[in-house]
Length: 162
Image 1 (tube, rainbow, N blue to C red):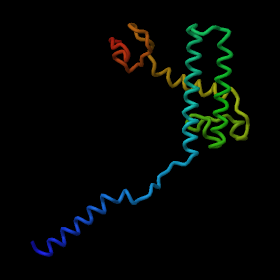
Image 2 (cartoon, helix red, strand yellow; image 1 turned 90 degrees about the vertical axis):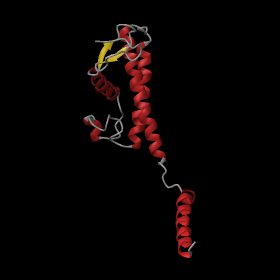
Image 3 (cartoon, rainbow, N blue to C red; image 1 turned 90 degrees about the horizontal axis):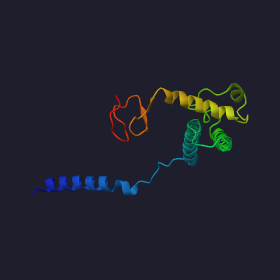
Image 4 (cartoon, rainbow, N blue to C red; image 1 turned 135 degrees about the vertical axis):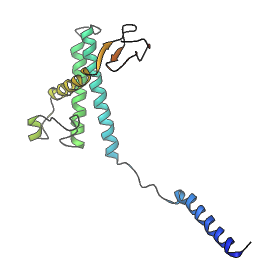
C-alpha cells in the first residue's frame, strides 16, 4: 500500500474518532431555569383546577353531588385556584393569570398587585366552557360517554354515532 493512502486513511480515521467522541467532551449547556419548571407546574395546576371546577359544576347539574356539599367543595377549589393565580402573577406579572395573557380585568391591569377575586376564575371557566361547547355533541347512546361533533364512532365503545 502506498504511504499517501495510509496517511489519508489515518486522517479519515482520526476525524471519525473525533466525531464519535465529541459528545463525551462537551459539557451540557442546555438547562432550563428553575423558574420555568415552577411556571410549568403552576400552569398545569391551573388547568387541573379549572378542569376540576368544570367537572364539579357538571356533577352538580347532574345531581351527583349533594346540594349541601357543593358550595364547600367549590369554595375550596376556588381558593386553590386563586392561590395558583397569585403565584403565577408573582412569576410573570400581568400575563400568567389569564389564558394566553389576554383579557385581564381593568383594575388588575392598572394595579398588578391587586388581589385576585373569584371573578377571575369564573371568567376563565366561562371561556373554557364556551370553547368546549362548540366541540361537544352530547353523549353516546350506547355507553353514555361524552362525544365530540367530529366523532363518527364512540371513542369508548365504538358504536356508530350518525
